[in-house]
Every structure is written in structure tokens, then in C-alpha cells.
Image (cartoon, rainbow, N blue to C red):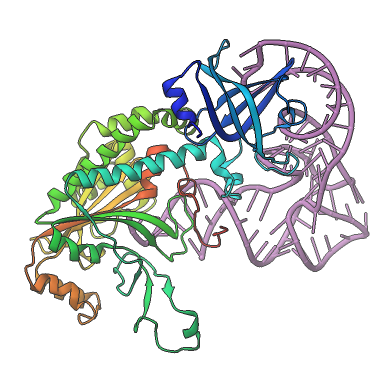
Length: 452
RNA sequence: UCCUCGGUAGCUCAGUCGGUAGAGCAGGUGGCUGUUAACCACCCUGUCGGCGGUUCGAAUCCGUCCCGGGGAGCCA
């Protein structure tokens, strides 16, 4: 049985015989022996293997090991006499499991650009940064479930294939069976697509189970080419019955702070890497975010502030027009310097399901903006009043009959409810400081790009 | 999709005025050393993103397409 290198670093079982398995990161030869650094993905650090000429395959194999080779090593853990590592493994046997021809293996034991690594999504997790991203992403996903499960939320698997377009959420990919290519009847009896949001279906379960959440893949067929958009991404969407906008904001803030605290504790070594090489000062900033309430202003207040700040924006600010990226960045990065919740947007620029405020002009919407990433959460209190919702849907040109099931939720036992969507990759971006969203998902899908 | 900058060796890049390309790293060979971005010596490496055009001659100028960075839109 193999031991995870992470456990060896934690337990430091000096004198014990152990077996590890992983991939060679680098080899250095000394007189009569070699240092082989092995990484098994369990942690950022490599285990230094001491392999001397007494090994049967020393000249034939050990001295030919290069970056990328896979090995099994059995030996005794010792305290390391040299600086750089606390323990090392004195090899009793080194088995080469798989070679990696250095003439053709693309990864070198030096830094590569992320653009270059993106050309090989199948090899890039073998690098320090992408491996760290994978571990942090996994931990964050775990913490998301922990947060909601600890609070009694029920996870709902909303459909991947859907026939309802969550209006305003973006362009849909169409789903068709191959056999219908000739124009035969739709497989599902009507047009279907990949989900752009699980919200509408989450509302169904919220109005039965109370507090629910979804955490699944989401698809947008937009021709977006930016560092923060993907055609396939993962989204977390809690939906809470008997909850208003204030409750929605509270849960969103608590969740983000919980996630940051969790990852700072459990991914400390990986976070150090990001802090040092990806985004200087990252850990300090995240601690700051995790330790205080988020700032909050209404859309109208935001407009006033932008109008009176004296700063010249490329796009003019005017009540009724959606905030531009430059406005959002100015507010969260320069004015407040922390996550900012903007609420109560004009009804005209928001989707039909958001609850109309008493002023009749705004809706109980909220966006959470975060320095460096921008919008990380979008949500709202939902319109629970049947008549108001029907009016909004008609104005939006939506066929009420198609959404009969959605309206039924307001027709029978309607309650105030609210929810939001958290872009999981944007969360990972914010936490790791990675500049491009294509680096925080294992296999990014963007227009013209989906290699494996 | 729009604006803008880029694409040269396996990687990161230089390449002047249009005259057919070179530096570090990587790789190979040898040496040295409890090494750790190891070190020293020598050697190898090119569809200059694709296609077309201008020219005696194009990495260099023009057109077009593809891909990438930055910004914008759409949003999470």
C-alpha cells in the first residue's frame, strides 16, 4: 500500500519503511548517488528520494530518470541532513513504472506560461500551480457542501437538459437526438437545451423543502472571450423559502466568508504558492475579506456616488442603465476595497422573476462584486405574487402557458423566497488569484476550444 | 462579437533600413559536487502561425484567415 506524500510530511515517520508512488519532477546526480524529487499530487511539496549506486537498477534506470517518469519507491524515512526539506526517503528499491521521453515530453522543470500549458490540459495538472488549483478547487467544492449541509439545506439535482430558458441568463445550447436531424419530432416533444441555470427548478424544491441548493454544471452558448467566462461552468444556487433579500444577502456573505476561512486553513501550503507567485498579498486580502461584513449600497446610491466622484468614465453613468465593468471595478476596488453588495436595480434591466419593490421601479436584486474578478454572485428575492409575476412575464413576452408550473408555485401556497447564483470558477479565481478562468477548471470550454 | 497588441528553436524571447535567423533555458554527451531553479565544457535544434500578394529578394511590407494576451459586451 502506498503512502501519500502529504501524510509523510505531516507525520514525519522517521525510521519507518514506506512505499510511495508518483511522478518525477527533477533528478540531480551527486557522486555515487542521485536525488530524485517525486510528486504524487497529494500536496504541493515533492519528496526527495535518495537513490544510491547500491540499487540494482541505479546505472541502468535511476540515472536515466527524467521529469515526468512515474516511479514506485520503497525505503526508509530519514531526517534530511541538508537544508530544503525536513525528511527524505532513502530508497531501498526504485521501480520505474512508466518512462517519459525527455526529447518529446513537453513539460520541463522550469516555469511555463499558462497559455502554453493550456495547450495540454491533459498534462498541466502535473505542474505546481495547476496541481494547487486542483486541490483548492476540490476543497472549495467540499466546503460548499459542508456549509449548506451544516445549515440543513437539501441538495437538489436540477436537470442538465431543460426545456425552460431562464430568461436573461444567456444563450442556450440546443439538445437534439441524432435521428431527428431530418426535422422529425423533438425527442422531448419540444425544444430542449442545456441548462443555463437551475434556479427555476430549485424554486420548485425550495417551495417544498424550505432551504435547498444546487451545485452543478451550467452551459452558456455566448460568444464570450474573456478571462472570466466559460461555455461550461459550475454554479452553486441556493434557494430559500420564507426568505427576503436581507436574508439572501446574509447567507451569501456567510457562505463566502465560510469558504475563504475553510480554504485558508485546509489549503495553507497551496495558498502560500498563490500568494508568492500568482498574486502577492493574496492571503492577507482574503483574511481581510473573511473577517468583515461586506459593504452594501443600493443601485441608486451607487449611481449617485459614481456621478459625484469626479472620475471620468468611458461610459456615462445614468440611473436606469446597467453598471459597466469600469464602474463596478471602481466601486469595489477603489472606493470600498472589499466585496460589495449592490441591491435594488431598476426593474427594466433585470429578469422577470425578481421581486418588484414598493417603489414600482426597482427589483429586490443583488449583485456581489469582488475586487479583481467582478461579479461573483447574482441573485434576488423572487416575485411571489401571482398577479405581479404574470404582468412581468407578459411584459417580457413570455408564454404564460409554458411556465404554468412556475406560476403554480405562486398559485398554491406561495411564500416569499430568495436565492442567488455563485459562479464556482469565479470563486476559485478569487481564492487563488489566478487571472484567467481557463486555469481554474480542469477542462475549459470556450468558443473554438474543447480539446479533451 | 467589437477594439487593441502579439504569434520566430521544445520553452521564454531578440532580430535595426526588406538581403534567407540567434540568445538564455530545456534536450544530448562528458566532467564535478549532500544536491535542491545545482554547476562547468562541448553538441543538436527552425514550414519565422496558415494562405495569397508586392518585390530581383519577405521573419520584416500589404490582404485575409486561425490562435493567444489585454480591454469591452453578455453574465456567474
